[in-house]
Figure 1 (cartoon, rainbow, N blue to C red):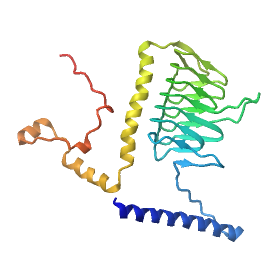
Figure 2: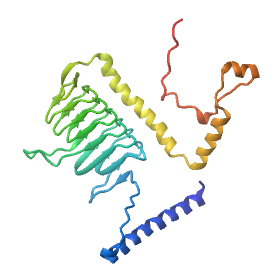
Figure 3: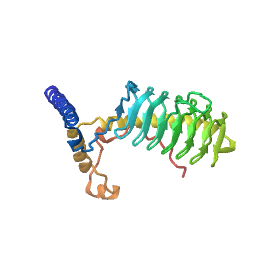
Figure 4: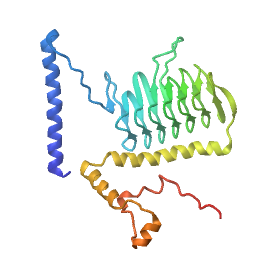
Length: 271
């Protein structure tokens, strides 16, 4: 999209925004006679009251995710498809290099029964698995929350601790460093191995790299996407033996090659 194209796009965007504002004004003037049609265009970042999300320019927020209100997302973090971070009655803080995976929910509590304020604080290089629920809790640096796990108000997951998939961690539970907790209600299962602790940091790095690919893909204009479709069709892989019979050599163009840091090199198997 050239300079003229961007200018036309921007003018069109503001015309649509103005049209929506005029529609709402007209509806208020009509009062009870107004037929209210429910139309809600999805907004990835949404203010609420005077609270505005702050997302680092190097963070990735998927198009279908929702980051609402008083939410801070740090450098290199990623909020994946279908996730909701709702900072309305309190704040949410996500550190650097952290990933909140698909369909997860992060919310807050204004306070507990004793009056303690309960924001949700997620540290650096944390992995939060798919469909996890974090509510008014603290997850320290390089901790791991498994898929479908639920952390209730006042929970603290210390550094290098792991919550197993599907676990329900009750209110005000503290999970110490180097331990795995799981079950419903969650209880101590065992100590983490050195390899598992190293995996937590590697998991965060892998997702940070993968987020860069998704961010680049989502930023592509329509014409570039269509061009790549043509390339994929042209350079579709065939059977190697079939290609050798035809004398065909297929080399993927650079546009279709994933960065090396996304798919780690696999060591050749010993014969």
